[in-house]
Figure 1: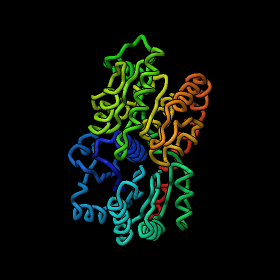
Figure 2: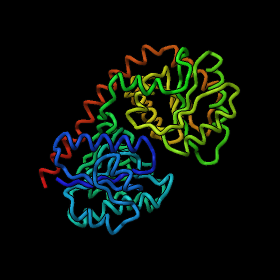
Figure 3: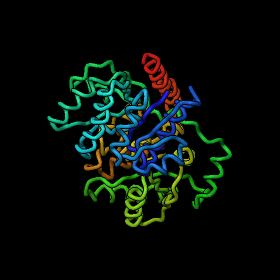
Length: 361
């Protein structure tokens, strides 16, 4: 079988790289001879990292040639079908789906997040094209509800983010990675994963204040960038506002290494969705900061708490949520263990449905 996977790959975003790694591992577990090609911003880097074929996002002719050659085209996870950040990227991804269907190729959404799509024209064209997709799996119920509200008639199956299928490092490797981080190992550690959002500044001040508050309670604060270099830069901006010292993980880690690091934390405060997903995989309590509906959807699904929207973040309520999470930490961990098992069971459905689709072809 030959497959083409497209997504937000090659942009040094650890969440999307983790999705690609998990999908590649799942596919190869079924057939070691499967031919996998990924659409990516950095073709050589992705080819080297994942030992697969690649085609550059900027090589549209090469992409079309590859679509002609494969059996199945996969929309490989993430929230790429939305117009909040850009209508251009939405149309680009929809065009890939449409071209694949014009060549009579099977198309599958592989545990995608979805939306929001706000512009009327974008909603119309998205509904028209997505209704041509052969199999749709989404990672959360909010994505399914949004698709249905737009008039997408396909059978939409809720599974789980592909990252829950990722093979993890063994304990000795985790200890090696953890030992290399220059932090005070005698103190309990709380991780903060942030991103830049629009031109907002107040949320940075409130995150700095919560970092100082926790530092005074003798917690070690570690900033965990999920995308380089942008998350490193905003982490430095927040750390500079803090009165107390913190640590920023400037080194580029693999998804597995970062999951291992997060697994050593007492708590993860996260804006980036996959920082929260990594915490869930590790069984670490979390507090979300909502810059996008997908954050609220995820913390709700895992019965975790949110500090609120990034545009209206308020220090006192932020403290209350963090304190409540730390106070009930052991109970939360028990819930996370059960939720993770549920996700691991559901994530296998993505692969089963893909295999069925390929066999039908």
